[in-house]
Length: 145
Image (tube, rainbow, N blue to C red; front, side, top):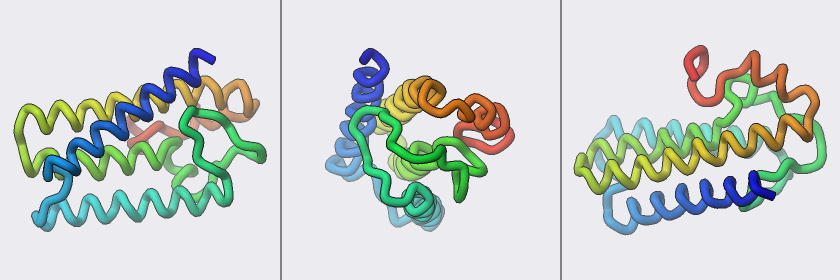
């Protein structure tokens, strides 16, 4: 129960920071580098969702029935959707470079990391092969983290 509440808190931090960046006009930019990074982020999300198939989204980190997905972007990184979220928000935040914007981007990132860590603990209990998968696949950045 604690892990589900923790993951919900992470989701709320991510969603709140993302919405605040959007509403304040600090999420998007016409800078070509930002547009490129955010386009790559959107492609990564779509690829990850396609790899997950018909599995549903849960507000709390809960494994769905079926096998552990290790194909598509999940063969390269364990958390492509959280990675894509960070890849989407940081270029926009850097383009608007102010302390409040950086604080919101940090809130989204902290929420993603919190949710990621809670989710991993849940997945280790649900999928016996998750521990081995975690040894061979980095969380967000191949060969780094």
